[in-house]
Image 1: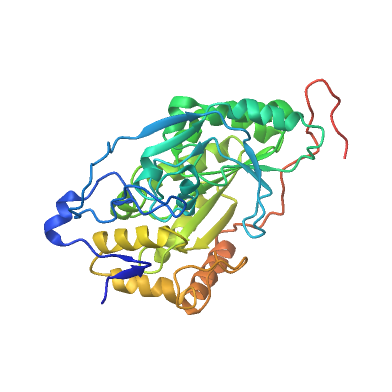
Image 2: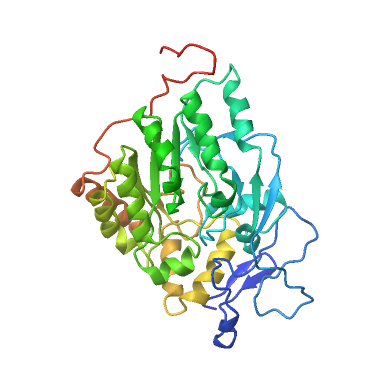
Length: 369
């Protein structure tokens, strides 16, 4: 039946009109999917369910964690980073498509609503970073902030872990690449300017749509697209290499905006760009399907089938080099647009890299490479 998604022993169906008033505004996910690592758990997989269920607090909860490590080696060869550090796990932005949702299951939570309202805060992140950089075995390469959840999500305004980690990086002259979709990064413009003067930082600003109605449901607690363009402009003006991330491109929802986004980003100072094609791995398949049919019942079938066409009949692909670009006519059309507008708006023309040669530990002479 159209609009139904079978997964193991349960299915997700589009919400009916008489239950639409129960939609949780300000949240991307509307349900908690099962955690594949837990044998016993309370899970509400349908908002209209009448099972024995105690509704939990929908407000965001911050759980302070003293982690054992903060820098992680990235083994995936197609993500463009060597190491990443994530001061927060879970993300209040609530982007329904976020691949990081699945990681929340390792913490014992659901990839659904739990991901957005149970935020793990690594309070000792800056101290762990300092310890990591002091290790004489560390051979400096750029570290990404963040490779998983957004380091400038709303929690950063309260905990300021990202800023403190940037201060450590500046002290060591450790290069950093940042990806975010939150204008809160401008709070740290002063330190980013200092790092940029040494070619130690670059920023990739994620922009997925100029349609505010779409953004409000797809990325409910994020900065507006106009504010993201302001970030690109202000950071570029103080010398920070800034680019635009168009990801993910979703056929039937936002892929037609690619030219407009790239043009606007370039006019505001972006010099490089990247994109991904939507893929729905793990629990995200269920969450996105539920979200899609609740928010866009008029086009949900079309969008779902277009995503399938971009992945050989599936909505996910785990093959390196293919999984984030897709394949087939739809994915190729998106790729060709990306190539065309990169050239038209002079993006990705400059061959550059962050400078690792200035790295030094406190008390030692600067390295010469």
